[in-house]
Amino acid sequence: MKLDDDIHNYYEKLTLDHIVELGLDSEKDAEYLADLCCISLNLLPPRYIRYEVDMAFYLPQSERFEMQMKVQEAVARAQQFLDSNS
Image (tube, rainbow, N blue to C red):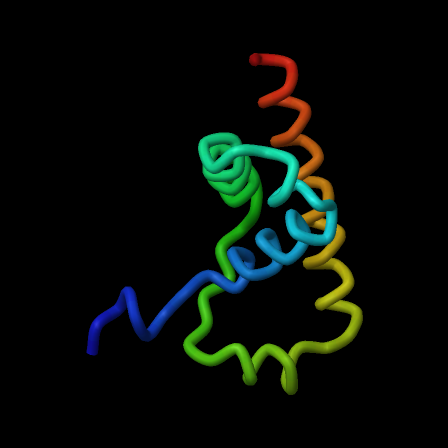
């Protein structure tokens, strides 16, 4: 088993999805986006999974909503930090 192929942090997907939803992937350069992801993910608790389908079927709607709110807050804080330090 290769851990880097079999296990990942579900917050990575949620964070990337939110960044795309905000349109930042087309507005900002790769360096900014990488920094944004790192800072955002460091503000979030890890949630390791093997298969995304497990999250789709077994995660209660209330927990999914809470995770999305945490991602939105983390990305906003990371954006504010990057924009104020550039």
